[in-house]
Length: 245
Image (tube, rainbow, N blue to C red; front, side, top):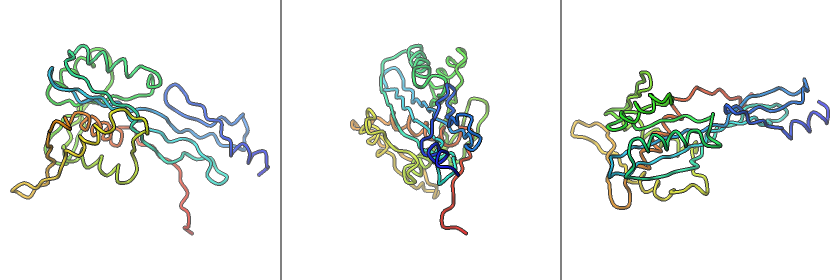
């Protein structure tokens, strides 16, 4: 391969498209493969009653074209918690308006997915979003560890939801941005969850609510991580197995 091609490989010109795709511009050089990655966002919301907090978390989800030796491939997937917000005393109409504006705001517009807690008042908010043509997933927390999807509604066991996020953190598949707002509050919420064993020997997730943690931000992140991991289209990357023959 010529020195010129090597230079182009080492200085990829990435183009971020409005729909969330990310491609390496090749300058029509036939020696450089055009590879498509992505950069998108997962929005998740836990919805409270009038006097309770509602919370929103945004996860940035990326897998970008990179150079691996002399080949352009889709690099490792990374998910970063980049934004969080909490509010209360808002009407359903105001909450729906907030979610729509957030979903359409730069840089999220055109490349974001929305998931909400579909339990209790979440069904009302889901219907209002649907009536306005906003595609989303409404996740209804159930017992057990299984999950199923029908239309925009997803039934998922709380244990499965919490364990999914725990595995992602343990594997380094999700992290906080250094400037993520409300990070300490999210961590306090997550610390309020614990695993308990019932008299029948079943593992369940319990939550202790205190003045230090309301649980809403933690629930929003748990929903967002689950939607990102289980409800997004499957992405197939290309990675070399080093040290194998």
